[in-house]
Length: 271
Image 1 (cartoon, rainbow, N blue to C red):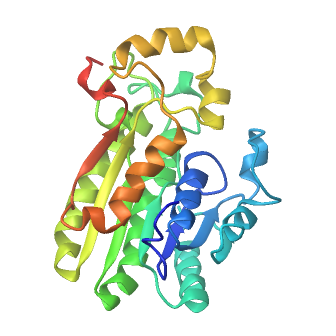
Image 2 (tube, rainbow, N blue to C red; image 1 turned 90 degrees about the vertical axis):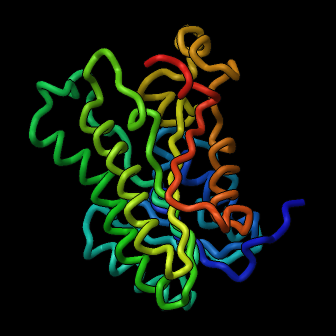
Image 3 (cartoon, rainbow, N blue to C red; image 1 turned 180 degrees about the vertical axis):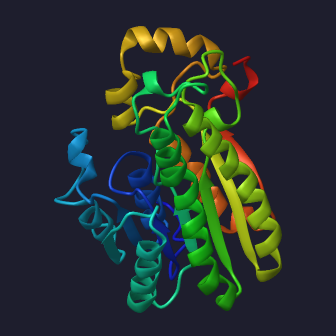
């Protein structure tokens, strides 16, 4: 039985309708938090045939005994973020936790080279990863400052911490690297208001999108990847959700401005 450390708290999870975001939302619900579940498509789990335990992710959350508010919004649009947070405050009266999970590498990888990526690709990937994170942090910071407390978790990636020899995934890597630095800057500003701001950097995690996009679940691809991971396995969404739990509960009350790799030790290996 998980201790209900977040009972009475309200958490906003972006990109929560599938994959890692869903895992974060479910974990926080198990800890007792009411959840504002955001996604640009609330049925996103269907896109990759991800099995869920109810007719919707919001229903999964409510089955855990918490309140859930599902908000379909594009968080790369500041106006939509403002409307979402306003709706959240109207419904729940407070906002204690923000997990900025929305984003991804949502362009063809073979067109993502540092020297050749198009302006459209560059701007799109920066918007859905970096701009979305900044907008959500800025809008959520106001109610958190007013109440004198809050926990923000941004999501970077191993791609934002390590180079690669191919030059591919350039816009994605740049956006995720920028999220790490933005986290540090925001932590310095919001610390005096009692708000912790941290970041996670997942490695090779077995999600429905990664399996479909990169074939991460295929034995031949795992055989190539696993020797570079000291713990000798790929990660699961729950591995990341447990670290998010640490960062949004009292266990991390004296931790801020940090980026925690969740990669089985992959960060130790040469790129």
